[in-house]
Length: 120
Image (cartoon, rainbow, N blue to C red; front, side, top):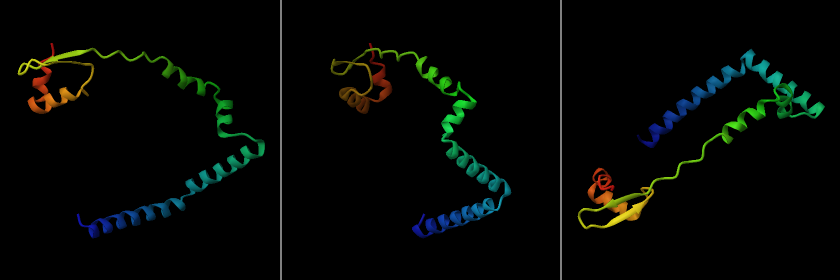
């Protein structure tokens, strides 16, 4: 796509989004929500509360629900050592992952499926 065509396409998208934004600005629902948020923030500031304080006040268990999920995770299982023996030259390598330099070279030369069949 040419730069000019790309520019025109972005220009059209921007115009459409601006029209949508203007339509939302005139919405009475949006005006009510903006008014509510403004009044709520003013009230919070007047009494020295934050949104977090209000959440803790209304739902004291909210902060405690999310924490145990992370604590209950089981530790990761250790990777098993794999031993590859190249039948072409008899070389043997041992690795726990696929990030071994020689293993990558073998996979590039012989193909991943063939090299995986060399696991002993």
